Length: 101
Image 1: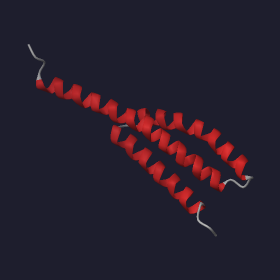
Image 2: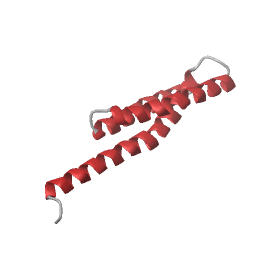
Image 3: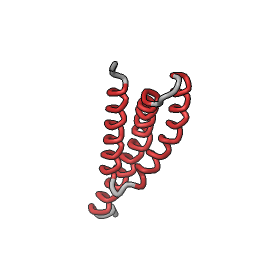
Image 4: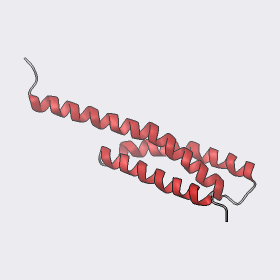
C-alpha cells in the first residue's frame, strides 16, 4: 500500500528544504567567502601581500560560518536570502573599494 499523498508531499518538501540549504551552505559559502576576502583585501590598510594573505585566512572562517548559518536559519528561503544579501553587500564593498579615487 502506498503512503498517503500528504506524507509523500511532506517528504518532498523536507528533501527540497535540505537540498536548498545544502546548496546555500556550500556554493553560497564559497561565494560569500571569496567576496569577503576580496572586500577585506581591498579595504585593509596594509601592504597588498599582507592584506591578501590576512583576508584569505579570514575567508576560511567566513565559509563555515555561512554554512552553519544556512542550516540555522528559520527557513530555507531565509537561508538563501541571507547568503544572497551577504554576497551582494560584500561584492558592493569590493567593487567600491576597487574603484580608483
